[in-house]
Image 1 (tube, rainbow, N blue to C red):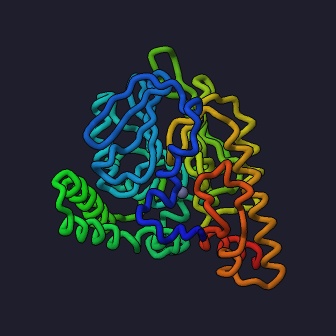
Image 2: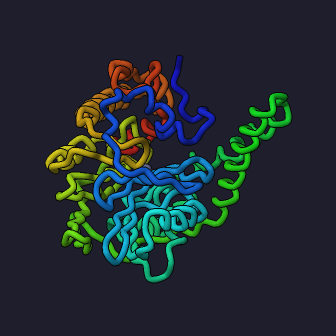
Image 3: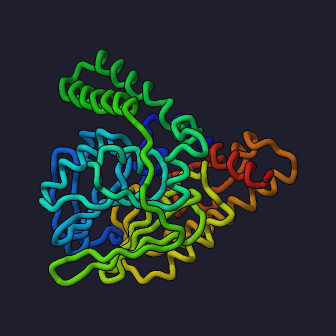
Length: 358
Ligand SMILES: [Zn+2]
């Protein structure tokens, strides 16, 4: 079967979310501490005051977040996919703390991590890479008009219409109710997209910034690190050396990341930078808490192989569209459940061709 990522019905599955469960051995999921839920969010305390945050499904969040709670303030990493999802996050934080949000960090500029920025109150400092600011400020064009945003968002009306049709056809009351709920969530999401005003970081970094948050035990060191280009031109990981925890954004996911803005040639080397850090838990921008380091090697090997195979096709004069259908990455299918046959996301191949043509 050919992999046709763009036709998968759920947007989340494109980012590899829905396939994760089947790829993970039970030992991959860290022993988890406190778990607290609001209606829209689940907070898992991976270390004292370090909360990994995911959506429960009642509001479409599309990505994970991180909340660091200190004595006087909180720092949030990533703002979800819409202003509405970010508002739900901000409302939900009250289930774990009453300390006000002081900082928001963007792991990268992508819509599903940064289009909630505008919901953070005035006075909250937004920190991100210089590249993230250049994208979200519009100085290099409007991100709402870019292929990345459009290739994910243009399909949303269909994800609203499909369950709507199914609701009408469903007889079983339980199924009808669950379809109705799915329809409601997607409809809310579609409407929430209209509200987006890209909002850039007002504090930027190039390679490193360190914050020290006052906590009961003294101070928490929070390192923001850019190891090079990878998933985007400005990926930042959030590293907590005392807790040995790192939030990787989409630079490192349990499954295959979107590569349409990626630097596939530089990405493996950038991941070498990640591997120099001393951590035992990594928190991806999508998917569950991770403790196994194997996926990092596996992904490096996938990226190197994809680059070589694409370069070969490019050299033979094969078009990007044909290459996307022909390139066979099934030698990595044991490590990535998304790979079900020959073929690669055409957005990744178009991007690699673009880099090769530069
Ligand atoms: Zn991303």
